[in-house]
Amino acid sequence: MKTKKIVTLGMFTAVALTIFVVESYFPPIVPIPGIKMGLANVVTLLMLFLYDERDSFAVLLLRIILGSIFTGQAVSFFYSLSGGIACFFIMAVFHRIFRGKYSILVSMLGAVFHNLGQMAAALALLRTSGVLFYLPVLMLSALLTGFFTGCVALGLSRRLKKLGYGKMTGKENH
Image (cartoon, rainbow, N blue to C red):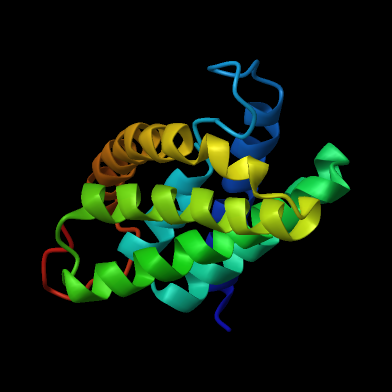
């Protein structure tokens, strides 16, 4: 692996981890468990938009593992991993299907599947269907936060491309 790539992946991982840890100290935006902005997903989206799926997935996994260690939330690791993997794979699939277009929609789908992944984790851990009561609210919040993070990631990716970050494929990503 080239030095520039290692440094870039390390930089994006550090940024994602910092955002994740800082966001964990924010008070909840609404008094419903599991709803937060998901700002660290901006970095996952940037990696997907600017680099490739493998690099994006590596940064996501490192952020989840290190974030769980740094915040001391062992139980949240399972939720983060379930949500993160579901989110990532749906975003990667639709990013390919849309050929780099509709980035905000890709983000919104990712947020929805992140919540679905976390819901699956909650069902597995808690073994009660009572958690499904939160599903409609989680889906609405996912659409709103996914829209926001998608807008931020799209704007940042355009600026970072101008600064020379990302693969230069000759085709427009967004």
